[in-house]
Length: 151
Image 1 (cartoon, rainbow, N blue to C red):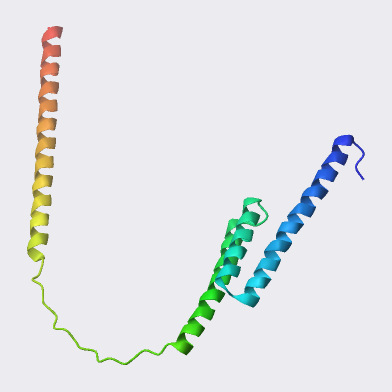
Image 2: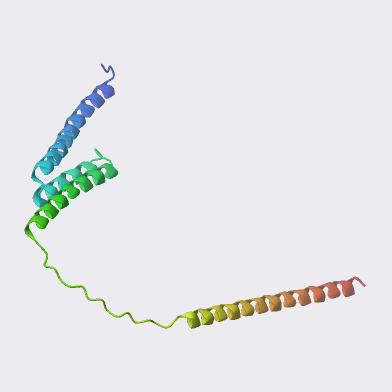
């Protein structure tokens, strides 16, 4: 048993929160059980709502909530598919094959694209060479000016 007054208060609040959390968890549990029995859209919607509220209160991790929702949605879709396959029969129709149109090859586009790329790279290398040539000429001029200054 807690001795200090703040420890006593912490015990009281934790009991209160535990009771509240247990109520929400039992709502989720009952909603899931109801969903397994009914397997309807209305039950699915109410179960989603309860689960989302529990996640909002940090009682369940969002991934667990996603698993529960996916499981319940799968149940609903299975029951829908069973009902649809029993009542609806599809009439048989003939399958007619259409003639396929052969498109011209797009190699010309690829070639032009590669030519453009080559031109761009040539321009880039030319500009790099020009910049480096300017730098070397500047370096030569400064070197000669330094030699002249020393004499």
